[in-house]
Each structure stands twice: as structure tokens, then as C-alpha cells.
Amino acid sequence: MANLFLKQAKQYSQTRPGYPQQLFDFIVSKTPKHDLVWDVGTGSGQAATSLASVYKNVIGTDTSIKQLEFAPKLPNIRYECTSPNLSMSELEKKIGTESSVDLVTVAQALHWFDHDIFYDQVKWILKKPNGIIAAWCYTIPEIDDEFDPIFRKLYSESKPHWDLLRGIVDDKYRSIEFPFEAVDGCDDTGPFEFRSKKMMSLDEFCTYIRSWSAYQTAKEKGVELLNNGVMEEFRRAWKEDENGEKSVTYPVYLRIGKVGDSV
Image (cartoon, rainbow, N blue to C red):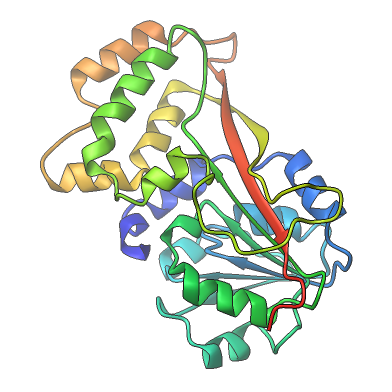
């Protein structure tokens, strides 16, 4: 998984969307204690930065040292590069002891994990019974009625170059295994929908596409997804505002649950 994003780590950090404040407000409201967060698959720290404004300490882990190089450095965030196959001993050494973490977060990464192993680690490290796990993904962005059909056509053409696990994201995390209890005030573990908005120029939007793992995979096979024909269609459909930008909306889907009395 780390290798898929190795070559475009800078593009990833510059153009991937942030996450809406409403998402974090919801998660915070369901977390009884705000002392320690483990942000798994932190990448370039998009989620960790927002979490650090509320929680006393955040530990962001990733298997890609290249991604971590672009993560914002804040006094209450500690970044750790972990092994692709994180052992319990490494977990205890780099994250914490049993029942020591208030919240585990996973932004746009849960679909890559070995769920049986990861969930055992989550149940071990979260405080019992009210420790929270929150995992979310965002699906393809929406712009307007003129541009969206052209973009969706490109996305459809990119499908052969995505890892099969990408289908879990397209399904909005509805089908992903999630063996946790509903948090207080909710009937189930989701997915709950939020919306993230980002002002982008066409160049920035294309840089976002180049940050896709599928883009890099296609390029290595000699396929340019953003070929001259696609770019011409994009330019015709992209109606900019006076600042040369458009509002890009990313639908975000959250699964959230509490650990209960798991052993």
C-alpha cells in the first residue's frame, strides 16, 4: 500500500482534501475522553492536524516515510513510521499499552488493512468500554452538472488501474467489516455522510488526479489518463470563477463505533 503512493507523496499532500469540521465535531462529541488519539495511515497528516486542535496528544503512524515527510509538525503530534505488518510489540512500543488510547482514527485507509489483525489491535489498545474507532473515506469529487459527466467518464476509464480494494471506497464503506458497537445516540455504526469542500483551479484538480495510485499505475504501463483529448474536454467544461477556481465537493462517509468490553 505504501508503495502505491510513494512517487506522488508531494502531490498527495498538496491536493488531497481536508475533512469538514462537522466530521470532527461529531467524532469529538462521541469520545468521552480527549487525551490520546492514534491516527492510523496518517499519510501527510490531514486528519492528525485537525485532531490535534482538540485532543491533548495525537500519534500519527504510516508505513510510508515519504508521506510523513510532508506532514505538518505540531507540538502535540508525534509521527511514527511503522512496519507494514505491525506487531503487538511494535504497537506497544510506538503507540501505547493496553487500554491507553481514547480514539483510533483511520482516514481514507481502512480498506487497505488486514481487518482481522487490525481490529484485534484496536480492541487491545482502546480504553474499555467507551474507546472509539472512527474510520472514513471520501468518494470521487463533485463539481457541477457540466464537468461531472466528463470526470466520471475518466474515472470509469481508470478503473482497470485501481487496486480491487478501491471498490470498498466506491461502496462508501457500507460493506466493510466493522465489528464494533454503535456509539451513544446512534442506532448503528454508519456510514454517516459529510461533505468536504475545497476551492481548486483546473491545474490543482489535475494534480489531485495525478496523486491517485491508479494514475501512477497507469503511467507505469504507458497509459496517460490525462491525455490531450481528456485535457481538452476538461478545459471546455471547467467554468472558473473570477479567481480561476471552482468549488470541489468530496462526499465523506464515516463508520464509527465503540469498543465495548472487548477482550
